[in-house]
Length: 383
Image 1 (cartoon, one colour):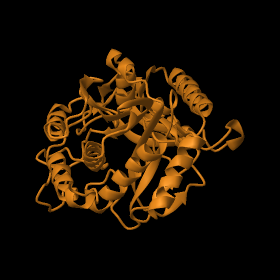
Image 2 (cartoon, one colour):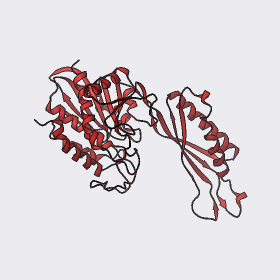
Image 3 (cartoon, one colour):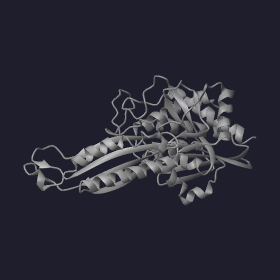
Image 4 (cartoon, helix red, strand yellow):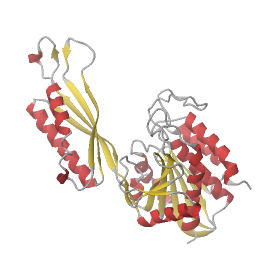
């Protein structure tokens, strides 16, 4: 019987194969096939394919009834071009695993090996490979899938690798761990005109300049909000290369973030009202669209304490966050319904940042992630 240390090389191989074959949110068919091929040797009791469109859930059952634990790994990659010299470089020019989901999947696959080597005495373990985390749609697509009704977990857990923290550290926080966010697209429509006769058109440029200035001030008055809020301009688009035409349309992209869901809704309402006032004053039509909404991921204290206990027992450093992380995670949809927690796994204090072209998941932390997850199984299914 092989030990986890002896199994790590094949998990690293799997991680690199997943890295070499990235797929965008909602398109993870090949990723699913690679995972299914790996699990053919593990032989779970049940397999639910195409859950949430491209996801997979593997079910392991103990000999006796008990609690059900769900562990989630995300599957999708990002539309970021990879520019690092590695043998397993992405085979897609403008697509790569720059958030470490390849590593998260390898950790869950390693957990499957541990469960197959040490069969459960009681309860059930669900290993969920979830699609479309990056767009905020994957968790809901799984939860709303009729096939999920067969799962009904008692606890839900997930991890995310975190550059900037000591390698193999376990990063925890009760309450809000990752804040809520959503994208907003504002479209302003006037009338294009010849550059020689600007008075014959309605340019959105003056409105864009006013809007950009006033949007930045919406979050300055902290008394309007209960907790931290943030507004970031992500892009502006007006006109195209050329010198003969004054454009008639413009776009502005925003991301808004908040610790409190009420604050996020209040900020969105304020943006909508401001846009409407400015558009009306400049005789423009406006269109306001929302994209990729993420809820707050709120951790249950009991689940966080279980994670801490396993980390301490294994001698993993524990870092407790004083404030929530500013990025968002759709795992919050799971913790809105079930007791559980999302925690961080330190990737290294000087490791490349997430969502950058030079990031690559550090294989050195695979074993820590597997042991932490397996420790939760030992504690929560045998208490």
